[in-house]
Image (cartoon, rainbow, N blue to C red; front, side, top):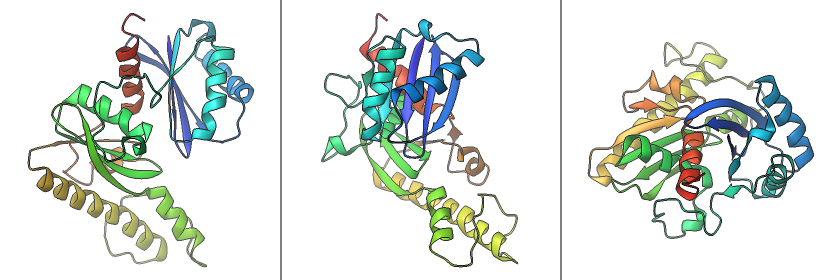
Length: 258
């Protein structure tokens, strides 16, 4: 079995693959100071609830946008799974793609992994939208190279700013409203967040396609992706486990005999 770890700013995903089959997936809140022992207590118990034994893990790969978490995650793999993990972005780890940015080291590991998975499944040119802590639009060319993208504040971040920076507005959840014009505060806020992001998605996808100058497939991932798929026709498909699949593919490109 292969253990894959995707550490975002808000949540960390842990998953186990057996061949191509995703046989277990779990989410923990990202905490910079969580120790390897604390990870192990949670993860090994979650695995056993699915009938999975930590001793069956034969490899591990990590992608993290939180550098402070890497030491303990590496220690987790070494101490509790007896494997030395691959880490996306470290020297010697082959991506099978070029990062065509002015500063390639600036590209987040999650964005690179999503680009690898997107091109593997759909080819290119491609726009990959990730509804995470940030809403990212990443562009992959026909050869599978990462050529750039657009970053905007994530939806939950915008909602939290709404709440923290105003005296009387409540926290809300993201919901599609039937009408744009809200007749009360909460529906008005929900309309602004939801339809505002639909407008952002549609405008940016249109501008990216015009600037790129070729037809492009548009895919989306992240927990809110299905909600927005229903509201706009610029998204062609959603892929819930895109980054996990990308980690599996990068593992195979580096460990073809494993």
